Image 1 (tube, rainbow, N blue to C red):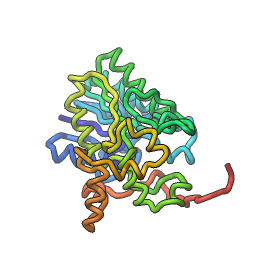
Image 2: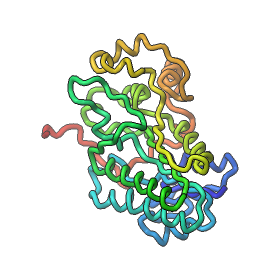
Image 3: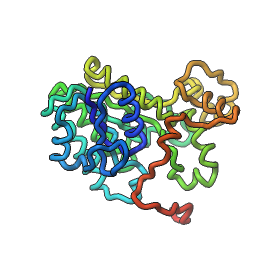
Length: 298
């Protein structure tokens, strides 16, 4: 199968390119940045570029996006151009090219304010049935792109699956308060409890979506490490999360959940998988930027 991978110079894009090739597929990587796994350099905002790249393609894995850290450096219009118009270009040209499957990489950030309940309320339990309440231009444009996928499937029959992935990048947290309070690795390992996923699990979800999209037609799915908590824990989680964690016995989990990561660390190994370490950090900006730890202004 010839598979177009957008964003092939990024974390997930490179991981998909490596894995698809090893599985016997013919991946074609496109990105605005040149990289070893990117065959065509250009922007998905350029419809002509998209059209040329889709020649002979059987399926699309659309991972290219402006991310949340870009909110500080890019205009709202940039997010609309890349995340919305770029997705529309890919969808419409995929239909014209006769593509059989379209998988869109979205984000749990699309849930926005739904992720944090009001003060005094129990912790939030997030499922696919929760209504997103985006809190920034990143979430707004990812949700808009999701809706374009749903519209395309309904109007044209193009099978479209949406994968709302949790965090999987190795870069430092973009929240200065979080960085001041905890070491970076501590933050990431704890996130496996509620908002992180290993990139190998993200890749496997995309490959499964690639296979099942023609049968399913359309669907939205959260891709995250399985939490050890249960809905009955919500009230106490808001008051005393460590107490809940101490008494929770872990059962079945994805290959790289919180329990597995802790076990590797205790054995003197690495927190992340060989694939995650091989890909390494990409950064979100062409030039290194200084991180402003605190400005003292609300």
